[in-house]
Image: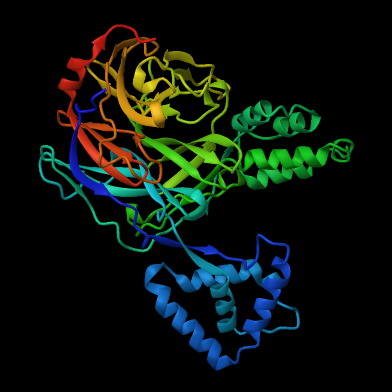
Length: 492
């Protein structure tokens, strides 16, 4: 295993601790005294005189205001979340309310611990470029305190030739606002079926819901349950499960004047409360030629993982849905960029160690996968998986892979799948395309190079990759050279 086929470009993205968001902070919330501490804090703030309250708020807004959008609005929002802790006899001035919100807020550096696992797609904005250039959107797994992952972005210009330039990443970050979402009944049914919830309450709710429904429709159907179902002893647990399953789908939108690198997809449900990991973005083109951005990522709640899909037309409005079925039971799912003979396909690793191919069934569940490639070479004997969505070439579907070898060392390889029958592996790179060199061994997770998606531009394959989760690097390889050195014949 040499890992010398790809050429590193020498430019890297490093974690930037200045990239911060504002989060709700409740003193002592992890301890039994949270109630007492929070109430006492509000009382102490209320006891400040008006002049000191004004000075404190003005100083806080002056110190932090240029680091965030509408910081006063955030303080007001946080006050509304904790106002139940204000004694009813207290009459707080508008200034004091904002100051309460300030004390119940803190900054969180979204990528202070690590920055890694990028994917790359064509950017929605291709203006002001020279011939031979392509602007791309790079998604990033950014990790902060507590190993909490979120999805961030960078804008990069490729070309001409092998030149690469990262555009600035300064400016206040925005986590977006919840948007209206039309839920899908088939996704709700698939989720209930997968979790083993098959009872009269679930059946009645599903029968009453339209094919697409919103939260108001959902609550109306729940409220209309017949009394003989509503008062069964198991119904409260069923209703909780129904709400939890439905909540897995949501939408988020960012202001029109935000730049891509200022947007952060931040955990919004209990299932992803400990992180949104390893987003694999791809530009999907439907049968009518209409493109959308799609992605998969892994939601993590601290105990369980759950795959999710993202759909966006502009990388400003995002819709998130769960993935269901036996083909979606592990990490590392990557969508094909188009349907293949009417089938929506994805790469997966449902057994934890083998790259498989799964198809979306009519009931919106991903079918049991067909094995494509298992661990068999020395540098991948622990497990193999994909490094992003397949890339369509004249030679076949190019699949970048990752393999794990001795000392849990990750390296990147490649496969070719037949264009018309992706179940068939037609060629394999016998060694590694990229492996950690001496400058990439140390980091948050040592001895790892890992990518969530490359693309073609010109005659080059452009590969963004995480280096030991400490930084993001970029490499290129001529597509013709890569295909030429791949060994023909089925992998097993």
